Amino acid sequence: MEKPRFVIPLRVESNKGRVLNGLLVVVAVLLSFAYLQINVVEAFRSLPAFVGFFVQNFFPANFANIRSYLPLVAETVLFAIVGTYLSAFLAFVCGLLMSEQTNPYPFVRTSVRMVISFLRNIPVLVWASLFVYIFGIGNMVGLLALTVATLGFLARSYADSIDEIGNSKLEALRAAGASYWQILFHGLIPEFIPSWINWTLFSFEINIRASSILGMVGAGGMGIMIQTNIRLFKYREAFALIILLVLLVLLTEFAVNQLRKRIA
Figure 1 (cartoon, helix red, strand yellow):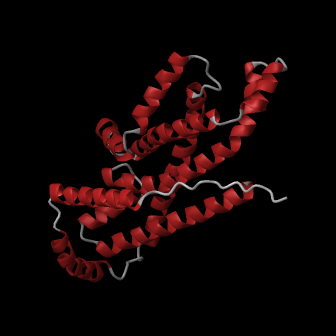
Figure 2 (figure 1 turned 60 degrees about the horizontal axis):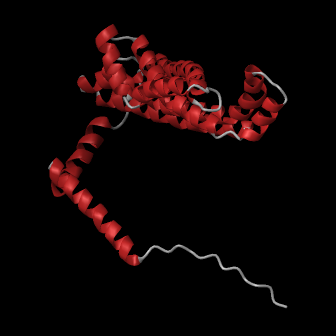
Figure 3 (figure 1 turned 30 degrees about the horizontal axis):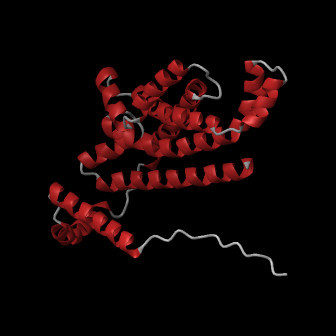
C-alpha cells in the first residue's frame, strides 16, 4: 500500500508584489536624490579629477616616520581593549537588571532599559565631541566615549541573550531549592558565556575602527594624526597612516576569528 504523501505548501510571492516593491524602492531612492540635490551625472564627471588628485598627492605613501606612528597604533589598540572590556563588565550588570530571567521587578527593568536605550542611540562621535567640550582634548575623552557607546550596545545584546536562555535548567535548579546566586552562577552564567564571548569580541572589532576615528574630534589615537597631516597637506604621510589603520583592522579581524574558532 502506498504511503500518503504530505505536500508542504510553499509561500510564493506574486510577481505583481515584487514589481510593486521594486518600484517603491526606486521611487524612494529617486526622491532621496532629489531632496538632497545630488547630481549623479556631475558626480561621475568629477570622478576622474578625484582619482587624479588622489594618485598625484597620496601616492606613494611616505613611511619615513613609521616609528613615530607606532605609539599611535598602540593607543588605538589600547583604547579598544580598555573601552571594550570595561564596558563589558558594566554591560553585564545592566544586562542582568534588564532581563526577565534575572530581575523580577518590572520598574527596575524598564528604567535600566530606558537609560541603555538613550546611551545606545547616540553615536560614538557625538559622545566624543561632547566629552571634548567638557574635558578638553585628551586620551581620557576617547576612552569615555568608547566605554559609554559600547555599554549601550552590549547591555542590550547581553540582556537579549540572557532572555533567550532555556528555562528547563533554571527551573530544575529552582525546584531543587537553589538560591538566586546559585541559579545565577551554576545555571545562567555557564549558558551565557558563549554569547558573552561572541558579543564582546564583535564589539572589540567595532571599537578598533571607532577608536581610530575618534581622533578626528581630538580624542587621541591614529585619527588625530591623520587629520593633522591632511590639514598640513602632508597627504603621503596621512596615506601611510591610513594603510597602517587598514592593516590593523584586518589583523584584528583575523585574530578575533582565530580566537572564536579556538573557543568554539
